Length: 396
Image: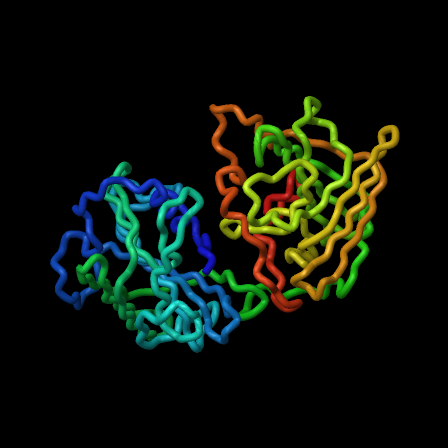
């Protein structure tokens, strides 16, 4: 299962949980009350939902319910103490505007049964233990916080118009707790083309030659190591700004960081398992914590083709570069994507990582062992681009 960053608050608290401190069990989910079942709404409790559609492709609607007790700061973290219960739930019905009423209990981890997905133990980028999208996060103060799996849970939901009554009984570390919530339920829609998300456009089919008439490159510096520079190259079509190609490749470290290097680059067979990414590498498409990297073609707001194998050749004559790209998209019927660009290339070093000890460890370097290929997707399951900034570097 892939851990998803579904709202800013959840992302913030999980980041805190990565630095687990000594546990001081002073703040618990009942917020200081006894553990008897409550008949009145839990004081100060807020509840929100995120909808992902048929995320696992098994005919069930996927939601995450977030129960929070504590004052939230502007950055999405708890100001002082706080408790967050996250439950991932699969339902037989429902949609982006309605969480279906009923009773839900913890199921197995196969994602083929309606109910609460259990806590799934895994490691984050720092090697700390996390629990998928079903967990309990407790914060005593800024220096004391911890993450725990949910051992058992029963969720009861009833709906009357726009008002919900949500009761959850759960167990953590051998202790039982109850929440009761009454009120509206905000639901954020993050579904793909299934289940009411953004409609998938009619893009290219089969093998595709992308006609590029512009290029921009970003030297990201020592993202993979001090001996190499990591580059992102964007090939664009000025006649159709709905499509472009992102290319990531690795070169030897250069003394002139503002000049695009020339050479031949290929996708290595062991990219996802290699301990070191070396110069001469054309990076295939990969994900780290749901963010998109590597080489891929974008149409509209959708990643349409993803590189699983291929090569890149860059040469220069005078002030003009010739860029020749060819890659195979294994998850789209092995379609072949080609593109050739001849012209000048604007180079930016705005995001250059010089590898200094005072600089924060870069994402790729910190998460090097977390590289993973895209899940195999059919033509109807293309991945949606999170966001696009057309002025400057594309922010995906």
